[in-house]
Image 1: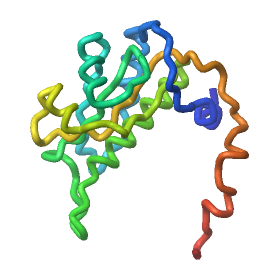
Image 2: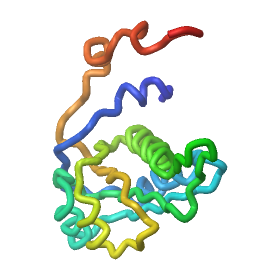
Image 3: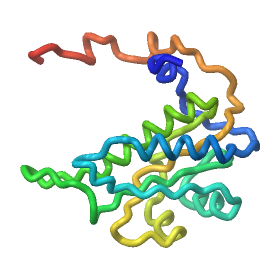
Length: 172
């Protein structure tokens, strides 16, 4: 499938079938994260793939994961993240976002649905998974087989601002 078609196929899924994600599909999703670029190639991300009922219940204390059979907690490692010297901006959250996007797109190509969850209680997640202080949960990628049916790939024509509002060439 062409990349632009994968991009248009991806949508936020909030209703999942009970079917488990096959191990080989999870491995491809994790491989997509593994090859994602990070600032200065420092790779300051740690992923926690959760599939057990107990683990998913722990995540459920912090966030709605919509009955999905798989969730990946994406954490930034503040001990490893690159820091921009001009303003001390640490890029762990950006790196985490890039990895998450790679995983979502790979999941779409594999026929899986996903939703990027940022509405969660980070303190609860940190406590439930005994995360050390240097690991900050940035988001939760929820994955599984969608119960929502096909998406309208032309929805962007209606749901996005016009290109001329998005892009400027040379000047604002």
